[in-house]
Image (cartoon, rainbow, N blue to C red; front, side, top):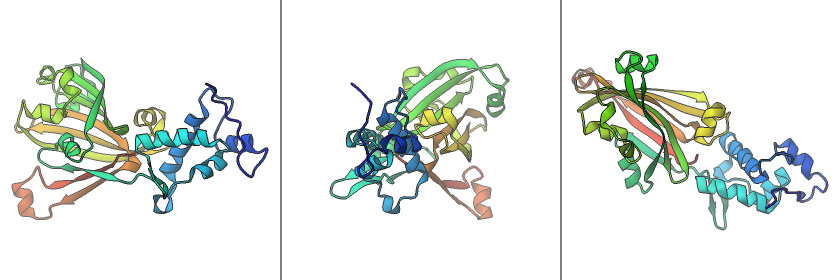
Length: 284
């Protein structure tokens, strides 16, 4: 099968290669044109404000990049499969703006929330190993650097869309209590709650630029904004049991919080004075 696309854009005879090159398509590259086009369209989705969420038509995309309708359809269909775009018969192609709310509460049962919402989560395990504790992790877990901790690295997905890429470290006292098979099927927080009584969590959130490595992990352009959530979970004795970091596509995530302003509430609920939702758009 040949990936060479020499179709000229309508109304611009002889300008196809020049137009494609200007917009970032390299016809000498080993990467297929549709894959290059998909990346460029992802960048447009991430950076352009499109009125009403209406995306460019296949004909417009073909003219912009000087490629055939077949190439456009290949690229757009992959973005539809990933949840970035959706097609509406008779209306056109739209940027998918449907959001899902992950509710921060006592149970933090995100897996069950997604399942009830008709979008079950799957976990792709990238690493599961007992490793020496890094110094920064030891600070959060209250253990010495070099002690054995359980390191888990996994990707959360809903359908073909990446919801987050997670790094987790489990305290040495609990490191041997979670199996690799369990980590591929269940919420780690749920697994921990079966073993100890959990009390509260500390979370900090910031935005960073994805860069090449995170862009690959989250399937977003390197210049995209990414939301980073650092977390530490504590048991009722006040000891940390798990810490880690989660990365989510920045365009797809919104964090909203409600904060109690009553001093009485703070006094009686010191660990639960902040609540909120993390809204995640299934689009990356």
